[in-house]
Amino acid sequence: MRAIIISVIILLIPLVTYGLPNAVRYTIDAELDTQNNVIIGSEAIQITNRTGQTLNELYFHVYPNAFKRGSNSQYQRDLQISGISLGRIYADPNDDAFMEISSITTGGHALSFSMDDTLLKVQLADPFADGAQIELFIKFIYNLMEASPEGRMAAALAIRSGHRNGVYTISLWYPKLVVYDTSGWHLDPYSYLGEFYGDFADYIVELTVPVSFEVGATGRLEFEVDGSIKRMLSFFADDVHDFAWVASARYQVRELEWEGITLRGLYLTQTALADRGLDAIRFYSEQFGRYAYPIFTIAEVEIGGGMEYPALIMIGFGSDREIAHETAHQWWYGAVGNNEFDEGWLDEGFTVFSEERYLIENLGYPEDFARSSLRFHEPGQIVLQPASQYPSLSNYAAAVYTKGSGILWMLRGLLGKETFDGLLREYYKRFQLKNATTKDFTALTEEMSQKELDWFFDEWLRTTKALDFSVEDVRSTPQGDGRYQNTLTVQRIGDAIMPVLIQIMDSKGETQKIEWDGQEAMKQFVVEGDSPLQNVIVDPERTVLEEVRSNNSWFTGQAQREGLPLGLAVALMRFRSSTQTILGWKDSSSRSSIWAYVRMITGSPTSPQRAAAPFKIMSPEPARPGIA
Ligand SMILES: [Zn+2]
Image 1: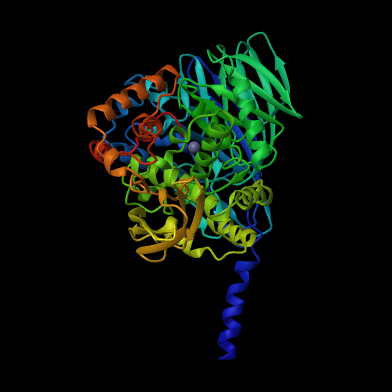
Image 2: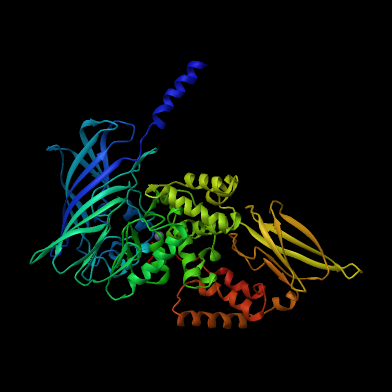
């Protein structure tokens, strides 16, 4: 027995001696040839092996090959399933996008390599021992696509790199080392759903572009040299997990300074881009902790839509939501990294939650508009699963973006604002410039709240259980001595269990809050008072993730008001939609936020039951077009 125990311990030791992650440094030289629309590049990659293993091969992402015609890549198979043809990707039927590798060497010796989909496998000549360092030199050519006009819709088509109308969006453009973590190599090909996972690394990138071009990039500009035809710019970036850039002769630049951070707006028509970006940077810095890098670039693009890269965001249409979203990614994705392919909610859920708070608290948007989880429809897919498991983009968006955010609103309700806000600040502080996991976040949540919360995270991240609270019955019985016995019956429909607050108000306007642990399916509460109840609301702050809220409240005279004529409800809805258009708010919430308006107009704390019925059939909220 003892021998078995000892051998088990010995087997386990290598697992805990890992010094992961690998230490990586990129030095890239690249020239953008705008005549032929190619990037000719050479890259030196210094890698220190911290895997705890001897490696005989290394893997790199060569993402442009996802788009290569006739390649049968995972991305193109995904497109076929979604009914999207390549004709919607490329502007020209004869165009093609791909990456070619000219050579890979180390110490002057050529290495053999092979490519499969968007993965490049390099066979090492000698074993690469744990703790050792290697430097590889890779020469590559990236043939850029001219994207179709639809290429502005980042989330809908997942085009992230290429050019259109003289604006170059250059991301996923160099051979990038695949992450090796405690699960080994993450050999995920480029996909229509899900984004990226990278090692934090240092970059020195020298870019050569036509002399008329402005360039915005991850990292700070160290120096530039202008010739008569070409301009060379040298960027340095430390502790970033990717490097992207934009370039165009059409760009105008607006530069701002805030507390030692340089904000660069590269715009085509959106002149206030830098100012709007700064407003968001300031808000998130106050909420979560100071922005992590010395420079932030916000660039208007013609393709790729709203998309995040470290210290650089790309903006398509420029809605408040888009700018709020992509800027928030600098905290959740940029500074606190994650494996977005496997745990997308850490990236998109956190970002949507932050974006929603910025819209509400800083720009004054109504909650009904800003909070996407108030319009949640369970997609029947759990949150915590690899992106490749979702059958469609709308499923993925509902689970990872909308429910991901809803879980954080719910956790904030459960822990209280102060504890929760402190938790996010601590999470940012502790995992800044590192990749974090769901396990890291849940452990920290338990540590900070001093609560056991496996039940919460399991229920909401790993099941599709739903929840619906309903006020079933309210009675106020006079006791003869001028006092009343008030009895309310509340039902919990669905399999999910959540504690909830019930707010009651009597006819004198006195309010009380009752805490219910929500364990039983039906619960009766008896409250003695000197007046009858006038109003009952379950979850008055709307923190719990519920699809149906129309049954959460009861009020005196409900019977009369329930019958609000359908015609009136529709007229109110149209009025509400038109006011939103006037104010420049265009969002699918206009249909559901009407209920807030109905409540305001009728003085009713509940949605009119009969009028609500026709709108139950509305389709789930579409994927957020143009925002990824
Ligand atoms: Zn996003």
